[in-house]
Image 1 (cartoon, rainbow, N blue to C red):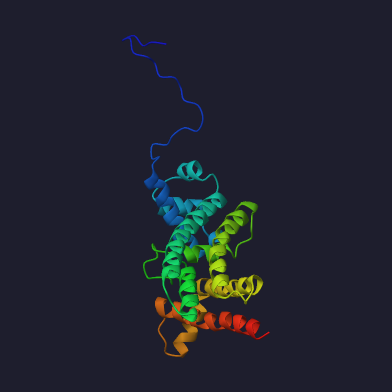
Image 2: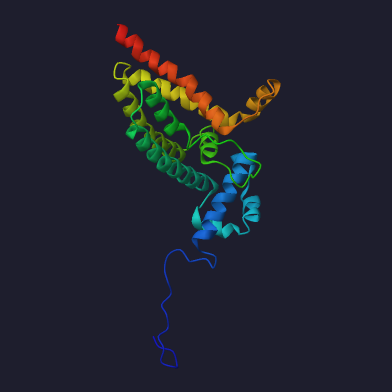
Length: 235
């Protein structure tokens, strides 16, 4: 069809209509705001009206990009998982390239596993860590989609378990896997029970430092892994 001036009348588009605000910046702003609010208040205590107000957008934008609040959480989990996985792979490659004694090698592998996800809450609540988000998501009731996203995240553990087995072949995959599982539960407690940690350290007149905490967790875990290998070698 043609207009009176000879121009072609554009055909109506099909499918989901584009929003005036459709751009990656709007999507990221919604994600960042949701991550901050979920960490501050908990997933169940944040409604979409509050989220859209804080993100300076509207409900149609949330529906357009994510559909539901549950799907928004899953998008956050996947984004956090990708960020952590990328950094874990980089640090693991560095750890494996180093020529270190066995004990130091094990510590370097564990640091590569934990450092990208251990990050304490800061006064700037706009900067909520990806590890904190994943730890809190793991405590929610699992929908099938959320469970799948968390399972995909946990698939990142295999290269670390393989690396530990190569250094500690006598320890066995099952025992090493259990040790890694216990270690990750310590990490999760750091994120979900930080108030208890702060209260305990306050009694000891201690100060929580992210790097110091990481070193303490690793120094706690390394002897257990080494003892598994030593016990197997004796028998």
